Image (cartoon, rainbow, N blue to C red; front, side, top):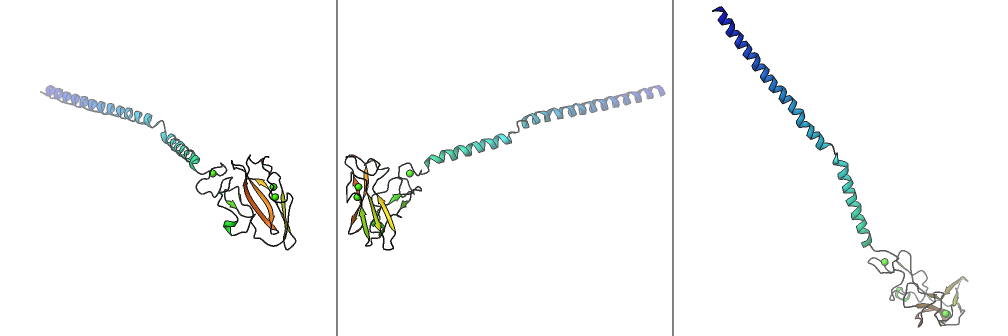
Amino acid sequence: MIKKDNLSVLIVTLFTVMLIVTISGCAKDDGVKTPQITAPINDAVEPTSGNEIIQEVESTISTESSENTPTSPVCGDNNLDEGEECDSDVPTDATCESKGYDTGAVSCASDCTIDFSECITAKIGACTDTDDGMDYAVKGVVTITNDDGSTKKYTDYCRHGSSEGFIFEYYCENDTLASQDYECPKGCNNNGACYP
Ligand SMILES: [Ca+2]
Ligand SMILES: [Ca+2]
Ligand SMILES: [Ca+2]
């Protein structure tokens, strides 16, 4: 009887131990599997794609900005764009007279605004012209002597950027400066005179 009891106790103990070993074995297996799951997660993070995304965004921004550049007006391309008063050539309706001056020449400044600084109000003074009037074949210089004794010179010039070949001819009228925008029949030679 005692032997039988000892045997049954041994069997129960053995079974319990096996059960514990089995359970702990399964638990160990689970423990091994868990790091296997985290390994692929680490692999997926590996590309550290944050920098790549930033670079892609930056390249997209730079591409967009470079695409916008050609659409903005360019001063100096001989084309009158929006926001430009002039570009190389001055619109024909922009004259010193239109600004309230008596005479003088307008020009297009480097920032594509119209330069009226050469416009003058007529005043009685000494006026001399080296080509004696409106001689379009000769580059002449008009000299105005103001009341205070100061002098200013105005030289005939070809209107740059004008494909029609206009010349700006200075002459004296009523002893003061006068000017004329004249279209040379054979073009302007860029030296301040019409081709003969
Ligand atoms: Ca332009
Ligand atoms: Ca002349
Ligand atoms: Ca002249």
